[in-house]
Image (cartoon, rainbow, N blue to C red):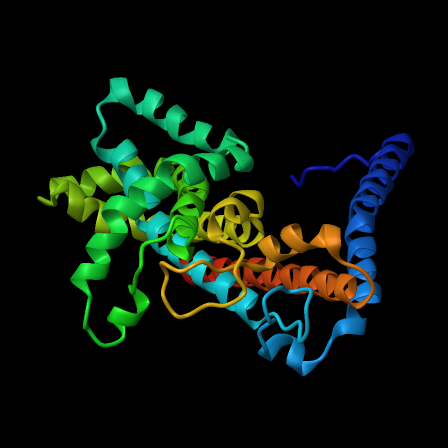
Length: 314
């Protein structure tokens, strides 16, 4: 005998319709600030748009002619790339340690300590980087790399001296520490979702802990780990105050990571108060460029996650 499905009362249907309309209105309201921000950036920034704007360096100050931002774009790519190069393996390594190797009594305190790093204001990171990290890097770390790669083609230029308190390298280390909690926290959470049966089966076949992590845990959670990495990348692209403190705000990059430089966000923060007319338009265009870069990164992350999930579903 087939089951008889009772009709939904009209009152409940109306309630569902009201709830659906309310949620849709809330979603649209949340999108209004995004639309207004994009409209403002386009309206105020397109006046400075030109090919030379992206392909030339300023002379002395960004506010002076020719006013190009090539060095800011290169600085952003360099500092974010170096920060991710440091933070990704360290963050994932900490997550593996917390889930697979850490004694249970230490797992929670260490995890909380790592997560607390995300709550420290960026300006505190900048001050710590300038007064504590920079002297240590200048006295001990930078001279080591300068001497190690002295005379080596390409690497000798990348790690050329002299040591400097204000440098792309120091800013990258500070930025790596800032994004480390995002990678660690998300990776640890997704590692904890691996079914115990899968790991126990691998151990039963004689796998070591490292083999279980490499062949079971990481493949099972790669979509979540990639999502955490992309979230950290989006955070790194927009960081301003900590980077401004320690990067040197120089618009001339000589090829060495130990030299001062600048980023898009640091250029906006350091020059916005003195800008006017076309210079203001150029800074707003820089903001639009940063917005576009962040949007591309997050969209690419969503696309890669969708493909990974589809591949896992097959």
